[in-house]
Image (cartoon, rainbow, N blue to C red):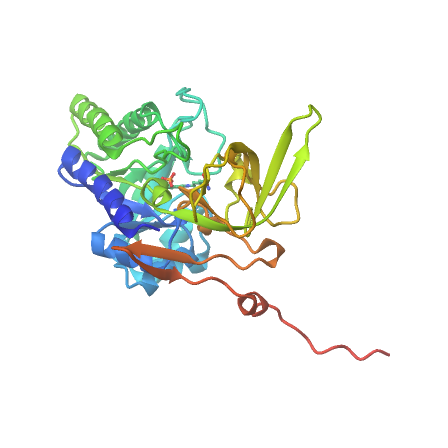
Length: 409
Ligand code: LLP
């Protein structure tokens, strides 16, 4: 992981917000990848942190990350998680359902606190099909629908609770999005809700969070959506809608995860075996097996995600041949790259590099087949440093609860 790249990307999002709004807050989405060191970097950068479980919250707190700069997300936060968040002094809890609204209100009341909250709204934007019909994409587990009226009911409920301070509204329309249009439609609909609030309560909600989801390039055919493209586009809509509806421009925040950490990281694999098969049509396919696979990168198997790969330990002038890069799991679907041209002379012991694996790679890693999860090494100014150590077999065995053998009768 390139630490400077992480810093530059995080700063670029904050700079774009400041440029467009004269302020605002970036909350890094911890789910894309977090460890204590990353939380420390974010603290230094004055970037906020979006956590969505007690586990992610624990990492932030272990880094002495300021709780006031944490947003707590999630569609099913437990009472234990909510209590831990309120006790820690988490800045904002993003409320996702009616059940949770009552739960947060009660827990805050019992603790004699007033908790700042946002409501997560579903603006009916299907960012991936480019259909922005108000009834579209309502069928999701997250948030309160604007179109159905649930959003306004939730607002009224928040306003009736003394232990809740409703400060703003939130939406997150999807992930790995390349078009600005979806964000613009969502922003417009959220500003509409701010106006409805003002009309009813004669005061304005001060904050608006437009979520994450900004797409990055995984292969040479793709290009990222840049902060200085998407933020001005969102800002234009928010400002013109606010003007039209006679609202002041709220404090705007965003939650990029992938766009900050994704491109910073390259996964390095050791090639273990190669083999060539003849396909039914007579053509050949060479398999290259690496020392990992679907356990540290489930994205190709789960989403059909595309990656590229490079020979990393030497240069080769050998002719490129059609190659399938596979992992070491006992499963045919354990394919990292189905088809890529790689030098014909790749052999056991070579290193293969797969770029852009920083987001949702290590963070979604499993121990399938009891493969210990890999380390994460940060590189800065030519110096490499482990920021998350490799798991070992003792780590795995530590979880086994072994009883003394039962006496046979
Ligand atoms: N905010 C909220 C409320 C979210 O649910 C997410 C991601 C983000 C922000 C950050 O989204 P980003 O900027 O990283 O796209 N595992 C999938 C991605 C799932 C995203 C879940 N929510 C993948 O590997 O593509």
